Structures are given as C-alpha cells and as structure tokens.
Image 1 (cartoon, helix red, strand yellow):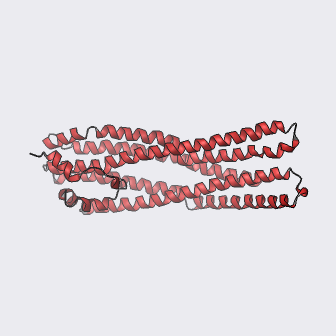
Image 2 (cartoon, one colour):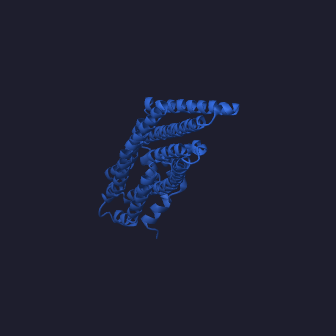
Image 3 (tube, helix red, strand yellow):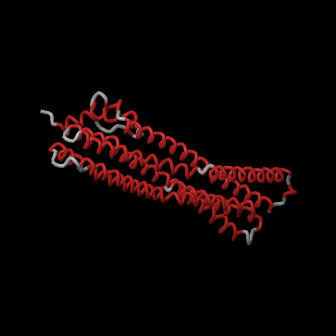
Length: 336
C-alpha cells in the first residue's frame, strides 16, 4: 500500500528548471489536478494577494536592478575611455604636431572622444543619482523578499489552524514548500555562486592586464625615456593601465563577485544540509506527533534566507561608494 508520504511526494512532483523563477500566482493552476488541497488553499484571497504583491515587487526589483547595472557599467567604461583618450592626447602632444596634418586630426578626435565620453559618464551618473536607481532596486527587492517568505509561513500557519488533523494536507504542503522554496533557492544560490565566481575570474584578468600596462608604461618606458626621449610619449601606457584598473575595481565593487561567490555557495551548502532533514520531517508529520514541525521547518529555511538577504543588502553600501568614486574620477578627469 502506498504511504501518505509517497503519495504526497508524487502529487507535488519534484523540482524542475521551470520553478527557477517563482510565480506564486501560477502555483494553484499547476497543482490543481494532482494536489487540489493545496490549490484550494492558494485560491484563498490572503494568498492570492500576497502572491500578487510579491510578483509586483519582484518585477520592479528586476527592472530597477537591470537599469542600475547597465547605467553603472556605461558610466564606468565611459570614464575609462575618456581617461584613455585624454592620456593618448597628452602623449600625442609630446610629439611634434606640426610635422603632420594627420596628427592634428588625431588630436582633435582624441579630444572629442574624451569630451563626449566624459559627458556621457556624467549623464549616466546623474541619472543614477536623480532616479535613485540603487535605492529603488533595494526597496523593491526587500519588499519582494518579505512577501515571498511571508507567503510560505502564512500558508503553514493557515494549514495548522484550518486543517489541524488533516496530516495528508500537511505532507502536501511540506512537499510543496520543498519544491517551490527550498529547492528553488538552493538552485538559485548554486547557479549564482558559480556565475559570480566566473565573473570574478574575468575581473582578475582585467586587473592583471591593467597591472602589466601600468608597469610597462610607468616603469619600463619611463626609465627607458631617460636615455631615449622619443619613447617617452609611449609611457602613456601607464595611464591607460591605471584607467583600466579603475574599471576592474569599480566592476568588482558593483558586482561584489568575490564576496557573493563565497557567500552564495555557503548559503547553498546550508540549504542542502536543511534539505537532509526533509524525509525525517515528513515522517514526523505523518505520525502527527508534532504538527508544529511544519512551521519549524519553514522557519529554518526562511531564517537562513533572511540572514543572507540582510548581508547582501548591507553590502550595497559598497555599490554606493563605487558610484561616488566614479563621480570623483570624473571630476578629477575634468580638472585634468
């Protein structure tokens, strides 16, 4: 005879890649045939409204995040290009411009490039500041997280209150929670941890290239210029390296790749350890000896996610610092 646990697991099924993006408003339709008990609960106005708010805040957070990162990256590279163009112009000025009309054209183009990209960087930074893109992103994400965590906890409390002795419904919810919260979040942190690690490696390559350029330009060519003055204009490579190093630094501060890779992998590991207790929890629920273990299991997962989110939110102060550093670089560039 099929056990209630096996029946509940089969009804909810297992986590799939389609669960990666949480859409609570669609849960009821997905489960209506196999788990009508859960679908009926999800149809209650309480959970419909929580789901609606979560999806609204989540969509807004995704939109603001994408906008902020695009604008910040635009500003970062624009400052870099402006600085490089200015450096090349300075190097070109060290040559005898009167010797060739082409050098005059090159100087004009470099000056125009520096001005255009410097202005564009200022434009993007002003947009970020005036539209409060970082604050809007953080606010929407915080509201979405509150609603998402609250949905599952509210459902657990509702089931214990309205379906106190219907242990099969308890089992269905435990399976539902694992699929749409625990497994989804484990997948998210595992995937994003790997992505941040890959991005950090890319930033490291940019930093290494900048260091080589800086050493070659400011070091080797600078010393060589003491004996061969004609190579001094090429020492501009050092300034270019410094500009690229700024890009690498700002990129790391905006993405928080190294820190997020370590923290996301750690969070995925903790969620995996909580998932180890899943079958034990189901067995306790089936016996009815401790119905409140349902809420304890939800709290164990939600508390970890809340902790990670608080840590992530606190790190955004470094993003603000990065934007201010870009503005400072732009001011210094204009003075130069």
